Every structure is written in structure tokens, then in C-alpha cells.
Length: 172
Image 1 (cartoon, rainbow, N blue to C red):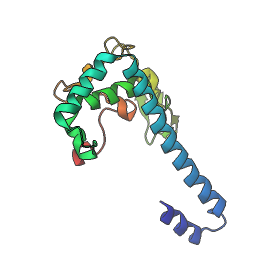
Image 2 (tube, one colour):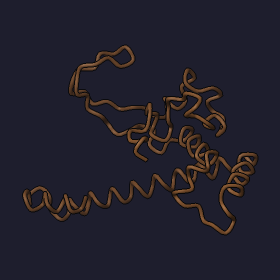
Image 3 (cartoon, rainbow, N blue to C red):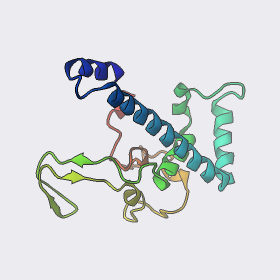
Image 4 (cartoon, rainbow, N blue to C red):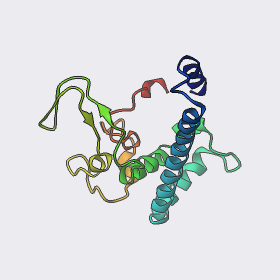
């Protein structure tokens, strides 16, 4: 990203000044750090209020990962309950309740409303994650709802802010 910005600075120095590039990098670093810490904070709060979930997660960690081994990225696929905890925490407490604005590229209809091309749209992740037509017992912390979520036909992923599926999921 920085390399691209510096290349753009060579071609458009009047727009891509050092201050603009520093500002963009700072925003990216702060946004990435803040969202991660907020997600972890909510996950820990949920676990503190649900000791049965902690016990189940600890049992999963003890059986799948050795006690003297730190959890590595390659271990995540062996920890479905831990993934369920993350999904459920993200569903209940999305870090960004309103997703980044999107610009409609064609005329379309959303929720019965005609949306002309060029309209700026905001997706309300908080409302999607609390929609009673999509979720049972929607205000309760229940990581179990995501156990075997792929095989049960769930089509919503709170991790992506309510997207239908993760775009590159098959590439992981």
C-alpha cells in the first residue's frame, strides 16, 4: 500500500503529499488496532458472563492443542467452538454498526425501495445481526448457534458484517 501511495506521489505530487500519505497510513493503523481491541474486549466480556462457554472453549483447547503450545493460525480450523464464540460476539457487538458506504453501480431494488445508480448506501450491520427473521433468541450470547454452521445451511456471517458469505472463503 505504501509503495502504491509513493508511486502515486511521483505521478501526482500535488495531491499525494507526505502529509496525505502519513494521514492515510495513520488511519489504517488506528482503525485496524481499534477494531481488533474492541472485538477482543466484547468477546472477553461475553465469556466472563458465560462460564459454561469458557469451560467448553477450554475443553476444546485442551483436547485439540497441547497445553505447552500457543494457538497458531493453522490451529484455528481445529477449534470450531472458538470460532463460534468469535462469530457470536461479532454478531451481538459489531465493531462498525454501520458498514462503509457503498455506491450502487446499477439501478436496483433493495427492501422494496428503488435505488438509482450512483446512490450511496449504508448497511446497518447492527440491525441485520438483530433481525428476528434471521436469528432465534437474538439478544442472547449463544455460540452454539454457529457450531457446524456450514453444514446447517447458515448463509449469514456476522464476522463480515452480515454478508451472505465470505468472498474468498474457498481460497483460505
